[in-house]
Image (cartoon, rainbow, N blue to C red; front, side, top):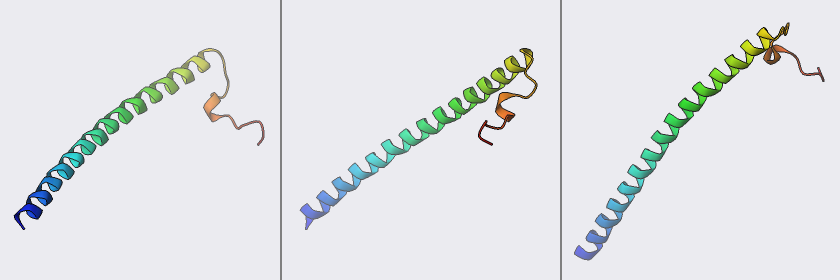
Length: 68
């Protein structure tokens, strides 16, 4: 009985470690996604500004695709 309890405790410890590791990965990925979202927004803004400076009447993002 003690051996089964010890194995169960070891397995529980390993599972807790795996959960902690996965939680760290998810948190890191969330930070990376937020950073990338900010960069994409900045690039879209820069592209819109460059297009407006080039004399585009309607920003490219607001134009309907040619098949519409």
